Every structure is written in structure tokens, then in C-alpha cells.
Image (cartoon, rainbow, N blue to C red; front, top):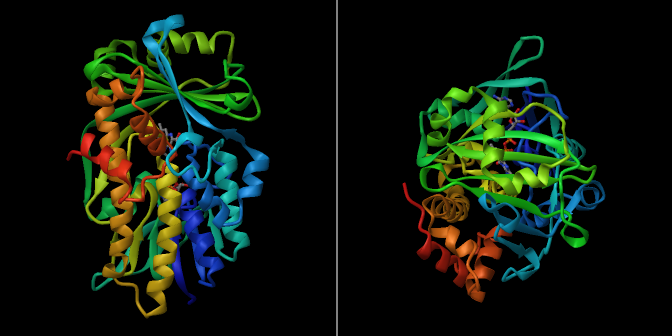
Length: 412
Ligand SMILES: Cc1cc2nc3c(=O)[nH]c(=O)nc-3n(C[C@H](O)[C@H](O)[C@H](O)COP(=O)(O)OP(=O)(O)OC[C@H]3O[C@@H](n4cnc5c(N)ncnc54)[C@H](O)[C@@H]3O)c2cc1C
């Protein structure tokens, strides 16, 4: 039986970036993906800080040729209709604006592009193949049991198992180390439309984030424009909001109720053609006990999920995957990969994730909303928020990072 250097569970952004990097460093890699790409996925708005990752794995030109460029994020106080307060953050104003843009990516195409890139770099790709169990021997991960489309089982041996299974978080759920983050029990209601309002010129690719409601019932919409004229639209609402509207039933009526509460969204959607009935998905933020162990590492959502308010998931996934691949490669060079070799990597990724968690919590508690919409805006805070929205959160010694941590500390 082949012994791979790495078996990667999941061919989303985390798994594909990790596999592409490891394979291009000369490692033997197998990717096990339950679905067959292209497949639908939420999470279409990328951050500028991910552009360097796309460059590092050699897909930046293709991404630029395929997707709409995003240069900013515009926040709208949605209950106000025509007179709504708005503020736009342009990525070029971030403290270290190495990349002043990102991309809006329908995930079926984007994820397929990344997975094919991993294959082109030399990774062996198995789609329609589910990992059913990570195999441990005396506490060390040594491989994965998989089941193909035909239902036939098989074992894959690997020196390192990379859990990139997204919110399935196969390792953390098996070891029962998933901890929900309190007050972030949300539901997302989503659809796509054609012909929604979008800004013009440089601002065409902006994400629109429309805030509505107060207190426990504060929610928000995303409108993410795509190059082909479609727009992804979703509402993120609290458990309390859903419970108060239980009589309405499921996705369709709840989505309509949210639009009614945000006149700014209703006017952006006026005349647009809906492409499918609204779906609903649970959107619980969670941390995991450990993102690494002897012979294994959890990257992307499998190492923790954060409410998508600031479009952070794909960035944490891809940045963590690239850095994780380098740490795995270095660790394997010395023999077996041990948990302590991955400690600096985990510290870095956790610090970035915790900054985002603090900001999301401060948004729902109301503390951050006043800063987002402040008029006039304090120049330093404006640039600090822009830097966070750009995803530049891994420089823990930067002044603005310390300021954000102090103002908006992450809570349990
Ligand atoms: C409502 C909502 C909106 C979001 N909006 C944004 C956004 O605008 N921007 C953003 O950056 N992020 C957003 N996110 C988050 C984003 O979707 C994720 O953070 C991102 O997809 C994480 O990538 P990943 O590779 O870790 O996981 P995924 O993209 O989920 O990929 C995991 C892959 O693993 C496969 N898999 C799972 N279990 C197994 C198994 N046992 N065997 C084999 N394969 C398996 C799955 O089929 C999947 O392809 C949003 C999330 C939600 C819920």
C-alpha cells in the first residue's frame, strides 16, 4: 500500500491550497473530497490578504481573468430606506495595503479551480469519496478510512492527516472538542438574483453589508455581486429573531420577512429576478480544543468557524492552509510530524481568528456598530477597521491590531 506524506480530507479552499503547496514542495499528497466539483457552497466574498496566497499557489492570473474585482466593503444602516446611513471602506486605505483588492467568487467555479490546481501541482485527487474515520495508532494519526461512490471501503496510510473537512470538522467532532461560541447562534437565509442594484465603475464589485434590527434581533444582509450579473444575497439572523417569527414557517417566508425589515435591501432587489428559492443553513460559530496533534492538523473551518459578517472564513482557510503546509513540510523533514512542531502555526492562526471573533461579538453587542457608522470617523480607527476588513490580521505586533484587541476583546 502507498504511504502518502499527507492525506487531505476535503477539497474546499483549505484542502486545495494545502495540497497544492505540499505537492509543489515535492510531497506526495492525496485529497479525499466527498462531493464532485463544481458544487454549490456559500462564502463567495474574498479578502485582499488572500490575494498573496492565490499568487503563491500560482492561480492569481486565472482568478483575475475569471472573477469580479472587489475593492471595498460598504455598510448600510438598512432600516432607513432611501435615507439610510452608509459608509464605505476602500481596501487601498488599509495600513499596509499590499493588495488593494480581492475577488467575488461563485464558489462552484472557484473551488473547482483550486482543486484542479492541486491536481496540476501533483496531488492525487479522489472526488465522490468520503473520509469515514481518521485512524489513530497510540495517539498518532496514521491514515484515513474512506468510502467511494460505490460504497466500497478502503484505508489510506499517510504520515500526516490534514483535516480540511470544513464545518464537518471530522477530528474535532470525533474527539468532542467543538465548543460553540455563545450568542453567535445564527441562521443564514440565502438565495441568488439577477439584476439587483450594484454600484458603478471601481465600486461595482463592492460587497454591500446591510444592517437591520436592534439588540437580540440585530441582523444583516450580504449582497455579493458576480461578474456574470448574478448577485448572492443572504440574511444572517439570530435564534431570537427566528423564534419570534416561528409562525411564518421556513426559508421563503423568513427571507421575505427579513427583506421587509431592511428597506434598503428591498430597494436594491427591486426588479431583480430570483434564481432559486431561499435556502436556510445553521450558522453557529465555534472554536475547537486543538487544531493539531501528533500526525494531524485541522485547517480552515474544521479548526473553528466564525460568523461570516466580515467575510473571513475563506481567508482564514487559505492563509492557514498555506502556512500549515509549510509547517508540515518542515516538520516532516525531521522525521515524524509532532504536535509541538505546529505550535507556532496554531498560535498565529488562533490570534488572527480571535481578533475577528472579538470584532463580530462587538458588532452584535452594538459596540462596533457605532464605530462602523461614526461621523466623522477617527482616521486611525477608520484605517484600523479597513485593515481588519482586508484580512491583514496576522501581524500581532502592529499598533492597530493591539488597538482592536483592546477595544474589542474576544469572549468565551
Ligand atoms: C452563511 C455563510 C456565509 C459565508 N460567507 C462567506 C464570505 O462571504 N466570505 C468568506 O470568506 N467566507 C464566508 N463563509 C465561510 C466560508 O464558507 C468558509 O469559511 C470556507 O468555505 C472554509 O473553507 P474550508 O476549505 O475550510 O471548508 P469548505 O469550503 O466547507 O470545504 C470542506 C470540503 O470538505 C468536504 N468534506 C467534508 N467532510 C468530508 C468527508 N468526511 N470526506 C470527504 N470530504 C469531506 C466538503 O464536501 C467540502 O468540499 C460563509 C459561511 C456561511 C455559513
